[in-house]
Length: 154
Image 1 (cartoon, helix red, strand yellow):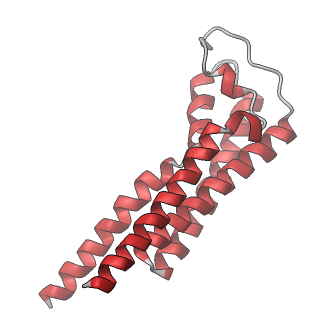
Image 2 (cartoon, one colour):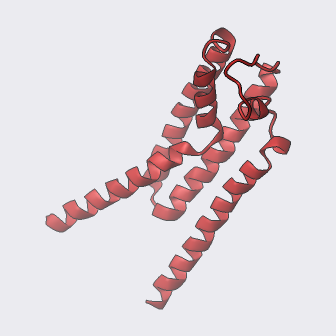
């Protein structure tokens, strides 16, 4: 019993630390990352002209931020589940979704940005925030619960 409490305390501290890193990324986003859309999307942007962007710098910055969030998300999933298959699936999902989001973002930015600012806003939001974690965490909990129920019924 005592070992389980200590183990859960360690897990709680690690989860808290990873969540704190997410908060720090968000708190210092303007100084760490190049993203002229941060201030653009804070204001009334429906009729505003898009800011001039250095697309290479923006791509590298968004990619780096997505990479940081992905690493922290996968680390959080590992801390919670301690299952290599969860980590493997997560790496695969984050890789595929990341590529699709980055391609979509720059495609919309290049060809449709002035007409589809909201599409640009939401794709960018998926890139810069760990939203995918909010989908994967309950999905893996559900999968774990179903697996436990199946083994207990057999």
